[in-house]
Image (cartoon, rainbow, N blue to C red; front, top):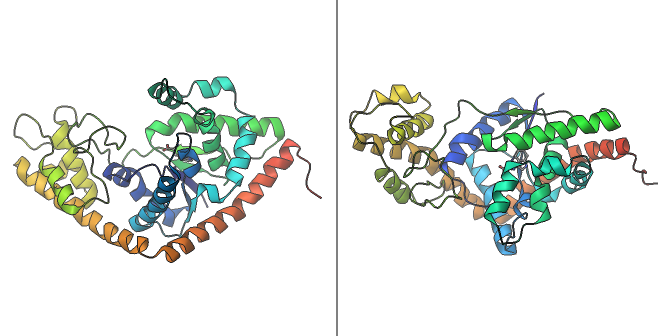
Length: 329
Ligand code: TRP
C-alpha cells in the first residue's frame, strides 16, 4: 500500500488554513493510505525554544491532530524525538547532501536573514537533511506538503537518489503530493496573503481552537471588496472569494456554486462563520476532553512511537549496512 508521511511543526497553534489546507486531507488519507504523521519537535529547536513551552506545544499539537480526526489506531501519529532513528539517519544524510545544496534552500535564506544579527543555528542550515531523514526512514511514497516545502522535498529526492547510487538501492524515492484542490485560505484582513500565524495579523488569522465568539467576530470584520457583487473571482475580488472558498470548503461544495446563493456581503459573512463553527466546534470539544486526560493522551502517543519505531529500525539498519558501518556483535 502507498505510504504517506507528513510533518507538522509544534511551534504554534493550528489555524484554519492549516486545517482546511492540510490536516483535513490527512484525516482522509489515513483511510486510503498507510499514513504516518509526525509532530516535528526536533525541527522546532532549530530556533531556540523555551523547554516548558516546547513540551506543552508538542502535547497540544498531538491533541489537536487527534481532535481534528487523526486516529492513532488507524494511522501512525508520532512525536519525532521519540524515535531516535530520525536523528541517526539525519547524520548519514548530512554527509550525503552538499553544503552548496543546503545553501540554496530559500527557506534557510529567508529565515537566517530574518534573524540577522541574531543567533543562526547550524541546525537551521541542516534542517532539510533531518526532513529528508523523516521521509526516507519510512520508505515513504508520497509526501503531502504545501508549496513552501517543495524545494525541501526535491532535495530529499536528490539525496535518496544519490545515496542509492553511491551505496546501492536503499531508499524509496518519494513523490511530492502538493494538493491542487485543497482550499487556499487567505488572511481575512489582507486577502492577498496566505493565512499564517507567523505574520503579524491577529484579526486576519482564525485559530482552530479559539473562542467561537472570537471566530464569528473575525468573519464579521473580514475585508470584502469595493463593489457589492458576490462573485468568485480571486484576482478581482480577493476578500469575497476567500470567504467563498472557506465556506465552500466547509460544506464540501465549489466556491462558484456557493456564490449564487448570496447577494449581500453581510449574509455571506454570517453563513461562512456558521459553516466554519459547525466544522470546528466538535474538534474543539474533543481537544478539551483529550487535554483533560493526560494519561490517555500519553497512551495514544506511545502507540505511535512504538509503531513508528518498528518500521524505522529496519530502514535505519539497511542504511547503516549500505554505508559500511560495522554491525554490533
Ligand atoms: N518542514 C516542514 C514544515 O515546516 C515540516 C516537516 C518536517 C515535514 N519533516 C517533514 C513535512 C517531513 C513533510 C515531511 O512545514
